[in-house]
Length: 299
Image (cartoon, rainbow, N blue to C red; front, side):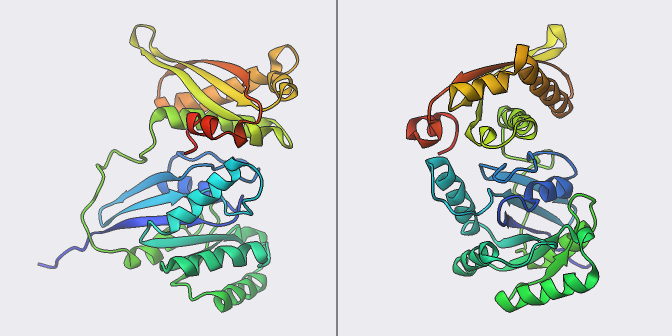
């Protein structure tokens, strides 16, 4: 009887901001555990997503985009999360965009991968945006910069190439038994995911600098079986009083819109009705405060 090999390992998803790492993770898992938006630096924490297969268990770490860490302490925290992840995994997936040429930003990420000494795959996302000759040129350029184990073109948004990516990845993971129960898809508590879903709507509905100075804290998360719902109270923290006025909107219109959209996603996550109440609070320059960063979960 042939021995069936089971593989497992930790894989870091890295890249510059806004290349589609969270979209790729959600697509691989077949469900949403990481928020997405068109804005860079949407992901602030390392988020673990667990893929269960008969032949493997893969723990993906979705990391903040690697960017220049100058500025506030929140930026430096996010970059440290990404760099730290590369030293804690069995393999690295570098995600880049097919329609973006290699720049200093990509070269910086590749240098960080080389310094980590971890094996790496290159995944080229958004392949539907370029013609095959341009894609081949990009593959050649990246091949000159680093000795990647595999180079896999995908479209995370459409789901193209995902199975090919997993087929390329699994042989490079160590043999070993499952580390997590099959029903577990992330190590993040529901309160964290709910807070992230609220922040996602802030990112989607507000423009310019305001979303980057927001944090969400869950103050009440109470299951109420007699009412067949979960009641959630959340505080959205901003850095300036004018930002609060914009976030609330005329007659409360913006905060209602954010709440309605977030509640829809939260109800799908929890599979129950949700009563969601949002508050907005000004904490001046919280992104530069060690105490408030710790309080808001960035430590």
